[in-house]
Amino acid sequence: MDNIIKKFLHSPILNSWFNAFVGLFSSIVAIPIVITKLSVEEINLWFLFASIIALSQGVQFGFNTTFTRFISYVYGGVKIEEFKHLRFKKTLQYDERMNKEEFSKVFSLMKYVYIFLSFIYVIILLLVGYFALLKPIAELSIQSDGWISAFIILFATTLKLSLGYYQNFMLGINKVALVQRITGVVNLFGLTLILAVLFFVPTLVWIIFIYQFVALVSLLVIIYFAKQELRHLNLSTKRSRFDKELFLIVWESAWKSGITTIIANVVKHISAILVAQWFPSNISASFLFTKRVFDILERFTMTTFQARVPLIARYRSQGDFIKLIPLLKQTQYISYGVYFVGYLFLLIFGESVLYFINSNVHLGSYILVILFSFATFLSRWGGMTLSISNQSNHVVEHTNAIIVSIIFFSIIFLYYKSFGVYVFPFAQLVALIVVTPLISRVVYKNIHTTFWEYESKVFLPFLGLLIIVNIIYYWSSI
Image (cartoon, rainbow, N blue to C red; front, side, top):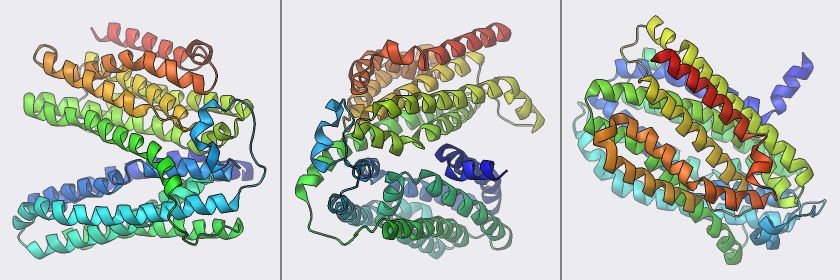
């Protein structure tokens, strides 16, 4: 029993699943109550605040993943001067001890960048947020509640952004399990506070306050453990002069990841807006529900892989291919397995569960489900493969994102009248197939292998299983 507990406490993947399940459970429990306690005008504002909170993550513009990766490099004994040329590294080469001076340079620069990002965020929120909130708040019966809620959002999200570098540090030294466990446990206990507010004082201000309070508690606990780690490693966190040369190395990767994030989010979410505009509400609701189910499935698949990214970055930067390749394969086996099991569960039990709860919306047609299954699966393959390239500090995902978006939107606007809602997963699938040769040619060189040599034992067997399952599903549905 002790071994099982110890394995859970030290497993990045299991703790990431725990945190993801808590987040999903909280949404399932809390959101239905929120929309019954607040007025229509308050619900509208609440969802708008959710978008503003998401903006605070977007402002990081790729710096979070870049700094996490660079912390992994330095922590693994790799010198800053090697960062630009890691993709050419073929042999095991690193210092047994971390260079504390170089770590301090990365950490200090991270502080500068996050303070600047917070400043930019506040300006954007004050200017854009004011005009975005003016009309929704004017429609409230008590307008002061809207502005108080907006101030709480501004204060809490700015504080979380400005101190976000502590989480980057923890992830960079491969404390993924601890970070995910902290977030999950705090959110689980926080759910009781949220439910108490929803039942006893269900006002907009209190709901906004309690959600932000729980998020800040999670951040403060992470900061506490981060400071403990810094003391244990005897690392200096005093801010030194701004290192322009190091910043240029960071920026070279960060802007590419930032552009990729923006394009990926647009491609991911634009279909919901377009479907709502172009198709009747019953078709739109079925499509959006199906898409939401696959979004959740994709999130768990992505979470599984991301849990091991810091360790992957360390092994790649050290040139330790003996440890890297088995780790990559095992992580991707688990990730594809999560997707495959989740998809089977959807096919076998999905409609039965919806019938049992007397749902007013159902999954889309079997053709829509099959198209989404292939598009989502190929999207995760592309995401994981490009992430492997990123860990050698050779970021090419922005090129992939631009090509995918061009093909995606071209197919949609040319064929949406002919294909109906099927055009969205179809366009994504075609775009991903087109860029596959580009990904294959660039990425596999970074781990000194070929597509066939590597994926014949990883991706292709799972793709074959997915094809077989979908053939059976198709014939049983017609």
